[in-house]
View 1 (cartoon, rainbow, N blue to C red):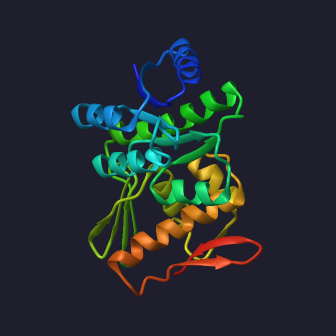
View 2 (cartoon, rainbow, N blue to C red):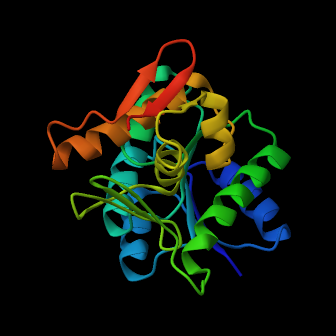
Length: 228
């Protein structure tokens, strides 16, 4: 049974989400503040976390929690579920390592579908394979089965969403991938600005290892391309 942690300080909202998730077969643990959730995660990580941004007296407590959780695990799926719908908050959430950013007006069936999609992707980490599937493109190495990416033999810590975007671009160098193509590969449904934020974050991670990294180029009006 998959374990989901939901961090939401409004009791009625938290209990409603917990009830729905439990009816869909998930084991759910709820928290109303960042310190309690963070302490629990240090003892045992959930399989997926759903986090609100404002938590009790911490206006950006969810952002802080996301950063701490991402430091504990580079691959655990993280969803922000919040009433804050500004582009600034969305970009901040994705830059901090969240895989998805949803607002509370999302329908419950849509939320369940997004959670299921993230679980399908993360399950690949635990899927055994008789043969490793590697992509090697110069300094880049991608191990699809282990969901690991290396640049100049140094590991790049990517979220699940970021991994599939790099994989989609690198498996066919020189070919332009539209934002819709990248959404299909990553199994997410987001707007163009969210895809752009993910790409910026991916570039930044490569640049931290190689300041001359320039393999991901923007093809204006079309999408993105991995340089040959």
